[in-house]
Image (cartoon, rainbow, N blue to C red; front, side, top):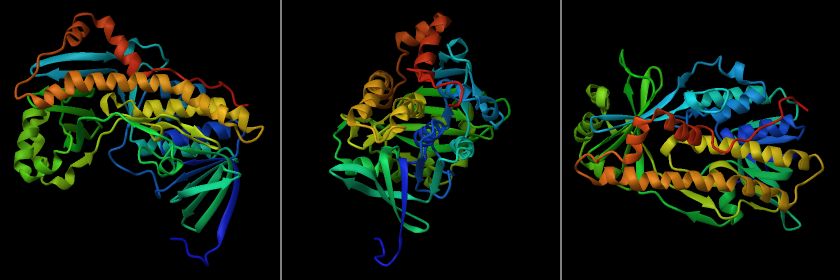
Length: 410
């Protein structure tokens, strides 16, 4: 609660963005680059948060190329991923081949998200009209003439009042501003949760992303250089029951599903090393109201299947900046301007969520329910038989509906 005697700092800007994740930082960078005064609010003191989306898709690499940032970005320590594969029982299937896609960079990049966000922050600060406020959280809307006209916030120096012609929520699936906005949300649901954990890397391990389906289990391993970031999919709401069985029983589950890394299950010594992600799929029916718009996870929470959430969020940010940059130069955008973002981005969002639901229903849910390993679907057999088909899932997951930006600064 705000101290009534504490002074309130007032800021006036063209746009305030709540959330310094990929969507917020990319949108802030692009709007500042377009000459708009931007303030980005990030509630944490730094970007060092574990178990976040660490995949940078070819579509984002294309965006960085168009901005002239790709060469500097690729100097950061990273891992290139050219193929996606899945193992069902003893059979292995390559389900995505990025060498065949249409973008300049024919690979995904694995890099800690904090490194990506730090990179964007450094580059954005080159613009005098970009301001990033860390440890600062938007608490409510400012209202003028029945329209959102900025936010109240709280940071290290106390209370803030930020007047803005546009307020953007990019603060994730639990967005506080979205909740306060009253925008209607459609909950699609997901029948599983994810347990995140780490296993050590050993010499001779592969480096591509591996998914594994075994009787009753679905396990994903993402190479991080010195460790494997692993995701064990479980029936929704079952984590308490798993914990009640004890850590040794859990390690036995890992030994059954971890393939070449099964001998490392013993490194998990207690459940403090296991993080629960409660999975949800939803999207706003309307993304905007006067003076306010949601992008990224604030507008549509995605399943972790395919790791496409960060891809869609960044493409939302690019579309928002492309549409609103010219408008904000003239003043506050009208509701019809904000609604263009939803019209531009809703179709790819619905399409990706549809694909995720099909994967849930046809692969994940049957795998979690069965006591025997399911038979591989025909689609996977076709991908193995005809390698040229692997371009399609790689293009859909890695590129999607690509948003471009002007190659030169205005």
